[in-house]
Length: 101
Ligand SMILES: [Zn+2]
Image (cartoon, rainbow, N blue to C red; front, side, top):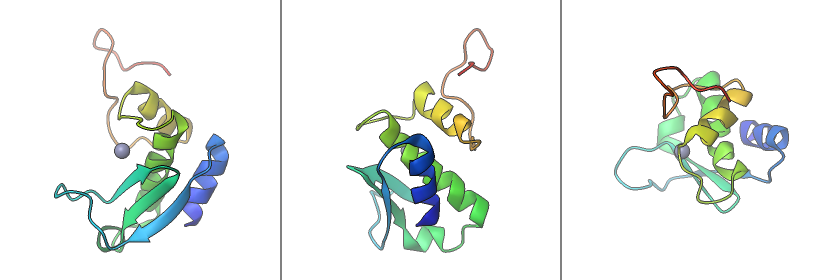
C-alpha cells in the first residue's frame, strides 16, 4: 500500500497497510489502525478514487503518530492537516474559530 508507506515515512512512524476482507464493527468503516498496521476493507476501498484512498491512508497513519490509542481529537486533525488531507471539520472550535495547529 504505497499511500500508507509514503504517509508513514512523512510522519516518521512505522505503519504498514493491509487490505482485509474483515469488517470492523457494523459502522461501515473503510479502515482502522491497530499496533503498527493500517487495515483497509477491500469491499469499501475498491471504489475509492486515488485522492480518497490517500486521505484514508493519511488518516490511519495519523492514528499512529500520537501512539495507540489515538482518538479523533485536535492532534489527529492537525496531523492530517500537516499532510494536506483534511476531509472533515476540526473536532473542536475555539471561540467559534477553527483552531490553529
Ligand atoms: Zn480514525
